[in-house]
Length: 204
Length: 200
Image 1 (spheres, one colour):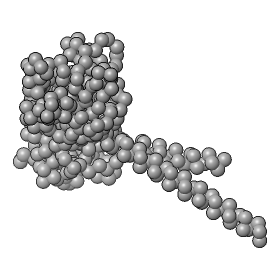
Image 2: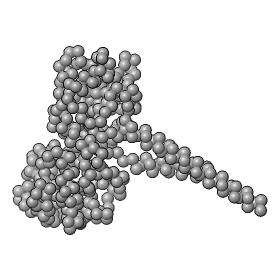
Image 3: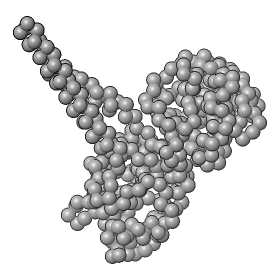
Image 4: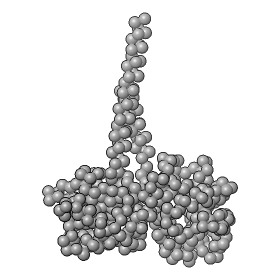
């Protein structure tokens, strides 16, 4: 009789441990899911992502990179970096490409902004060939970097495209995301104004 | 031993979750209207044609109106058939918009692209409108359901086609077949390389 009760207790314990394990797993999975699905928000820092140093010397100079094979966003020589997550397969990215080019031109033609705000595109799931197709098709003047295996895209929350991040780079090498938004930005002037305000490069 | 069993169970659940997290980049052009079926069996059919065969003839209705027969390009154009599994799904929605900006790569190789799915015309109409104006015809293999996909051996067991590319030369001979993992988009450079090998 006592033997039977002990056996029943053991079974109850086993079931309890199994349930706790499953609950803990589900909680962990939920956390992982949230972590994966949320892009870095305003005020956050970027996850550790390594980008391939561009082969084009002009693009390396633009970003202020000195050699090496990979780099991190905060290594870019700028006060603020605008990152566009795009794809050559994305109709909205195609449609907005001329306006993003115009944003680049406005910045580069303004002596007080040139060198302080830099643009970079990351081709989600695009091979180097595909990124090059997009660059040639739209005469994109700023660096576009291939993320062929979606690894960067995954780190940045698997966002739909186009998605724009604004990242402020501080003198001490730290950084903060000050803009994080899905979709076309609309007009270049209004977007730039917003970037200047939110990054603190222009006092409100 | 039992502790290990629980650990294996927990790790197993995490692995399943991680493996199911197939990455794809959906354009905002489709907003929240993309249905994600989750990861699917990579391929699920057996080819009925091979490189060197005459491509089976077909006539299908086009979204733009009328119908298109493969034979109308015989002696005139190389033809690329792009079967994609289904409208309003993640990878498919971000495949043809890419082809839409590389018409020059088709033109220079004297090739036409024909996009085919087993969806009906109204569905294809609504879906392709989100892609902008497409330069190539989109054909519906809806009825008899998937008959052309079936003839080529790319109809999956649940009624959608594989993600497959067929390159057919001006003589109607199949020069390349690429059946991709349904969960991933084929690299553009592979198709371009095959087009460049064709007689112009």
